[in-house]
Image (cartoon, rainbow, N blue to C red):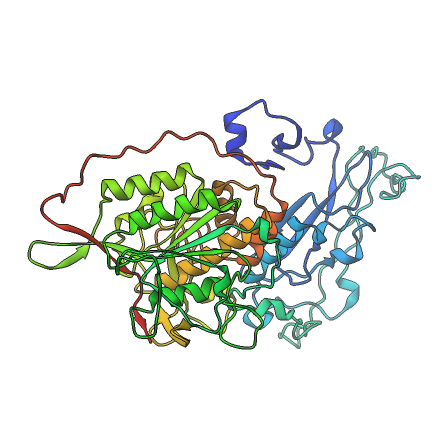
Length: 534
């Protein structure tokens, strides 16, 4: 069952739906008189893994737009005619935003031919091409040849719409040589794009008026890093030092926040430091990790966002919720406090999207990481790492051992490892770090570029675009270990440009309890979600 411009769920909600969402149960029954139809399969990208089926109608032939059914094969390689050679002039949809999104989505799944064993192909060209089926049709039809006549001695009529297929000769065999004939090719060149190992930030230059306001609530931020453009930064309150400046001097505090800031917004193409994902968007920074008041910092950001004039807001929360128990031990916290719930709800009602870290406790995910199951303005991020350098990206990455997982996990992004940490800004120079904090910052940067590409999208659309373009890991679709898969920034931005904005459906306000179960016993706290920093 195919729904050309929607989902099966759209049909379930409205079984009478028509137009461009009318479900197709068969390409035959979808056309007049259920006449017999044939089609052609061509390679869409020239990489042997994504193909297009073009429907050749009996009554009209083909319009040669090659967009009827697009499908992908994985862990295999196909050899067909190339779409470039068959598509009609002026109808190549691959240059559209949606076409670009599809192409970017396919790249991680390309399997180099060296990793596959092609089936033997006979070297005798005469047996490569079985006789072409002859189809009845109008002699003036540009697609189908004239209707055949029965062979001599055959009085059976030619049935309209039924091809006459001559018997295909059997392949010749040489009893003296049991080995299969040599294939026609030894290798097939794979474009360099197939060897992309990790998402690489692109140079997007969307207008400043379209950029979202990026908020980062963290441990504090270096005040004098040469790779940071401080003219873009507004400082919120320092809830640790109880002043109005979250920027710190060298040696003043933890550099976790500076590292996150650089991944998201370090200046690009300046010959120093690193390439931030978005060096155009305005930034707001608040120092709250270590104060016990991250929720108050979030409210402060939302207040500022509502007055900022920027069309959208996204906040990076690379933190894990904990509690200090009566015996002094610190454990992961599985419940939000009323103040935290109220702050998240305030952000949701203001259209602010929260990107939160899953945490670094393996199978244990804190209340904030799990909150995406309740609050629809949250996307929870885990960390992935490269586990095989020799194969395609879809099979080379997997969840990092330290990355928390379970219900609520939405997506993963590269987070580095202790052996191979991620580089970013620290102090007035560079440093390294690994953890779901790093992965979260990358998704925050991606959210900012998706929204800058199409600022009229709702926050729900932004989340769905990131999830629908992610590269499957382990298995297709969502799973508790890796969510929907690995972030694909290029595909997400291209799909955002092709997506029609729509308003979010009205959702009732979340219930906010008067207290939490640890009231009077434990002290709610939080910690930065990282494994090591240097």
